[in-house]
Image (cartoon, rainbow, N blue to C red):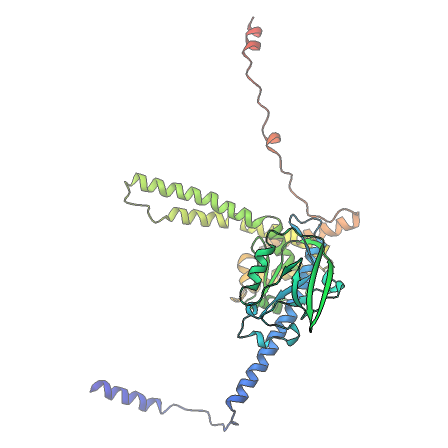
Length: 382
């Protein structure tokens, strides 16, 4: 009974809350739905425009650095998808010229790329590529990726497309580029990263960047992480230090008679130490290589120091990239000196490639040991 009275009191008090006094125009649910749809179309159209920009900048950086990249491949400048990859619920809000449906269509072509020069256009439905019939529906892109996974890339590719009911065939003269494709996501967080195989950039990063040059600096920086082997090095460091922790855990278990050390604390702790080892050095090396990659692709590097300083110093929570890009005086001085180094090389007519440390071979590091000759020793004594 008391509980019931308390509830009556609470509801009575809530009825005393103040409300706005404006007599607003009435809006129907149909009007709200139409406006929501209009805003979605604007949002996804913006995403496609930004994706086109990022793909264009990335293609330019990858192609104009192919001569110094460790991993290269032939590429035509096409991005394709279908409604299943985009998402069935949102695909209808994307620009109609993309021709999104169960079949795979071209959703972006880099300007002046081999595909563009061959005459392909956005919205073309791909029927065949190198004699392989493109599948449709839910797992289409996975099947395509699996088919071409071990496929030997060729300089010329044959493609068959459907353009508004007209079946056309093209030969695409592909060019060699650094084989680190650009993946553009719809995430609003300001971030970009490398995974050893690709370069991932968010829509938030493009919104944050002031111009094409800043986007290029980010892509070039991540390219350096990939191509200079930083991800593999960090994995190796994690494995080495994790092995030390694992041995310590085994020792703990052994010397405790099996009563302690079963939670792998040392393995976890030492693995983390390994993963973070030389992280700042790897970032500085990516800065160094990235400035070269951006410059070689024709982008302005004069503002590179200020850009990374802005990323590091602002450090709002939504900028995920700042956690791996510490703002240090040494780092910015190094970037500044890298720009000076490139300008000097250009004026001296030297090759615009990053300087590398001299790594001595095992033969150079280890002096050749002389064989122990007993006969010579006996003769000397005689």
